[in-house]
Length: 348
Image (cartoon, rainbow, N blue to C red; front, side, top):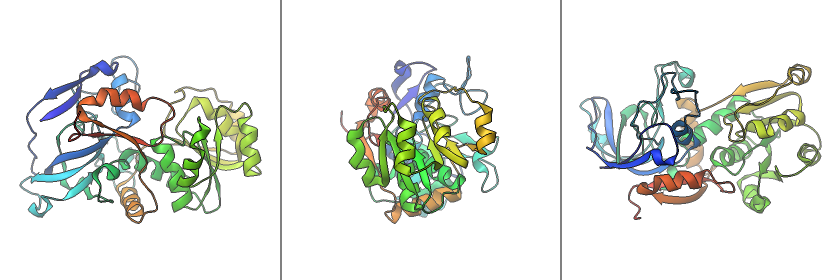
């Protein structure tokens, strides 16, 4: 089979197209023919070494064992089953829950042994992948590409929204609102939980599209008076912030939060380090949340909302598998709306 491997920490030239044997499923696993694999920041940051310092970087302290096939947003068809797997699963079209863990239900995402597909396991930048049968779920939509865009971004966005306990009518500021997680934060907060969303983007030509996703107001981070703009359109301070940007909008986010407000972050595309005046936290009674991924039960709730049409796929473009390097470079460009997806069957 064809696969794309990361050969070490570094630039996009560390991605290599290889031919290798199709993996065999173990006793409790299935073999999936990959139909679509959406790109996330996580596999780019994994390659770039952004999760650590020095020679070790990854979801785990020991770093990634190279070569590694990345990719975690995977849909496909089950073509083979391990000895202990019900053979009726063969032929099913599935979406993969993206990590293994021995953690109890509800806290499996923060278990010390949480291991991520595409980082600790070979992932979906390939024609085939093996995965535990119990972590394969029915696709929420009939289309492979559309069903592939929710796994990591959607689970993260869903968990963020549940984590801050969004209530109907609350005002939620969403940064990076045109990205994979951000566009889903807008949809989930507004259309599932009934919040009023203020979406922050770079390019205001995306305004109408963001409103279609559920945003009440759309503002640009290029504004010289962004904090004032936010408070003006909201007619007062914000209840909560769902952030994927990090440093670039951190001080603005804390400034516009109400007393008792909540700030939840799952990314740092605009800077991984920031300055914080602790007086802002304690004088405004702000609660900070760090968030990534989520639980299996949250994943199920998200898939149900997708199947009911409450959350819709937002896709910017697709690339053939062999063009994974070009796809990652494109993914990092500003101004996209939604996900970039690799398709193993797409012709170059």
